[in-house]
Amino acid sequence: MNKFNPSLEDTPSLYRAADSASTSGQRRFLHATKTRLILLSLAAASAITSWRVGGTEVLALVSAVAFAGALIAEIYLALTKPEKLWYEGRAVAESAKTLMWRFMVGGAALGIKEPKLAAEDHLLSRYREIANDLPGLELIPTVGLSDQITEYMRKVRALHLKERMRYYIKGRLDNQIDWYGQRSRWNRKHATIWVTLLLMLELAGLIAAILRATGMLPIDIMGILSAVAAGGIAWVQAKQYQALAAAYAVAYHELAIIKTGASKVLSEEAWATYVAAAEDAISREHTLWRASRPFA
Image (cartoon, rainbow, N blue to C red; front, side, top):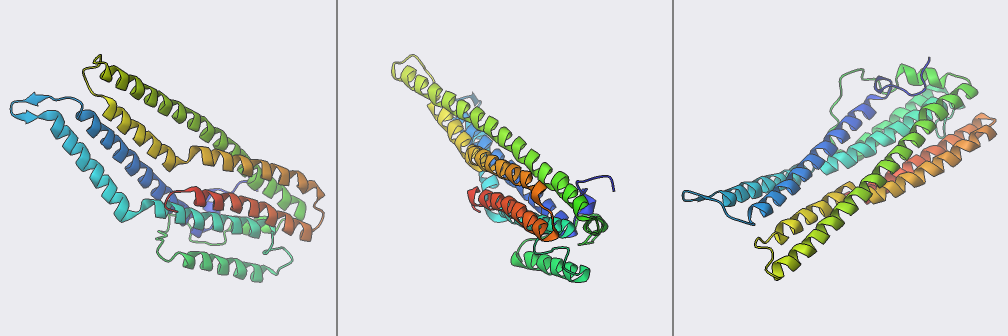
């Protein structure tokens, strides 16, 4: 065994199915939301002037088509609720993943002191509870093995304490710390970009309004600027850049602190408690993430 981070094939089929469902829901929700906002902005832009070809007002027709497209996107979001699939799928996936790691490395309540068969039965029972908690969630099986307890999971669990500690710190804690750090920086960067863009749009709207009032601007572009700004605000609210940057930063520092305490662990009992504390910290971040999402 020469890797610390399990591949997708090494994870339980429940996790893979839930992760796939969540990714699909997220993609569909964001694409539909983006399409709707762009079409609404296009409809507003088409209304600032006129362009007649024969007896047809072309820009009015463009505006009508854009509004129709935005309406279709809105109906799609209302009927299919892809954001629900995103949030619920992620909840199942993260719950399955934390149980997987607890089982592999001997975290409470799946410690090494528990007999092998009893631990496996406990793990499968928890998986069953997780899946049953969200009966409306379609967990379509992914291609690959159907194992809920993979050979990789059993091999890691059979290692000595020091080796399991190494696997957990490198494969779980370091991985999560790096991910939280990268995502915190990414969200902070995009929050700054969007705030700057929205301020520029509002400033442009103010200047356009003044020029229009003084007769120096023959075309009324305030409507399009307002629509684009409103669309930008709606997109920022959907992405939650600032909230996620802060939440990921907190999780990053909390896990970094927890990691430093690994050197004090000298027994299986202490290790089981240590792993439980680390997984609880990761679960708290996910709980805050769900609470921050619209419609969650």
